[in-house]
Image (cartoon, rainbow, N blue to C red; front, side):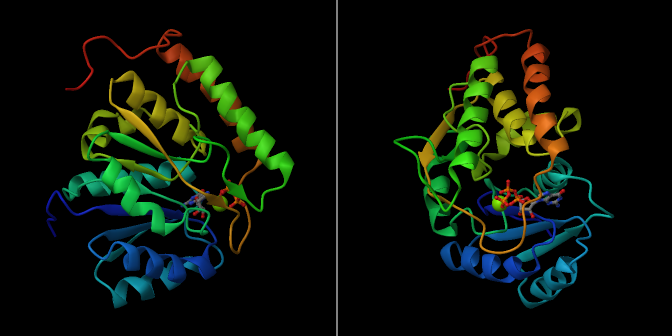
Length: 250
Ligand SMILES: Nc1nc2c(ncn2[C@@H]2O[C@H](COP(=O)(O)OP(=O)(O)OP(=O)(O)O)[C@@H](O)[C@H]2O)c(=O)[nH]1
Ligand SMILES: [Mg+2]
């Protein structure tokens, strides 16, 4: 079915989020009833896929992409973004299934997308807003953000935040087939490429809450990937620390 450009799509990757998907889709559609939702599930062992099929049957704003197995966070988003581009959706929101990202903040992201190309819901502008995280996790997250900024020069306080709004033009411009990341470094990679291409990135403050139920999918391998991928990104643009000339929009 062809959609008009102005319909926002909310893409949510899921792996073992059975108890979260029903409540998160209800909450999202309550806040933005005009939006559509696409879940990308990696054949979750806990049966999330079947729950999603039930939700999709009950509401034609909800779609599901079933992947064969655990292909990773990046592959899930890449499939979701391609799906959105094939269907002419307007701005694309990315968020987690676990209520760490508050659906009530989606309208602010969409609104900000009126004057910028990539909007990042930031935990670290105007202070630090994270509830229920141990100090160790906060420190790790802040250190990751600093590491990304130091190595790449990207002027973003929270480059690892997954609560975002991408304008369609950004998804068209980023070569989704050239993404190097498998895990959460996908977020740093897409922000970095968007910035290098001269698009406008804006951060708006959000409050991050620790997940409501279920477990974290962070692994040592994903963590290791996040460390070296930042160097790969930097070298991909020959350690350049500002956007490529002549591409800035407007
Ligand atoms: N399809 C898919 N989704 C994934 C994969 N890994 C994580 N996700 C989803 O991506 C979102 C973010 O993952 P989380 O496990 O919440 O990562 P996190 O926020 O660092 O960890 P927590 O603090 O424990 O929540 C969630 O909706 C996950 O279900 C994956 O390999 N495939
Ligand atoms: Mg989470």
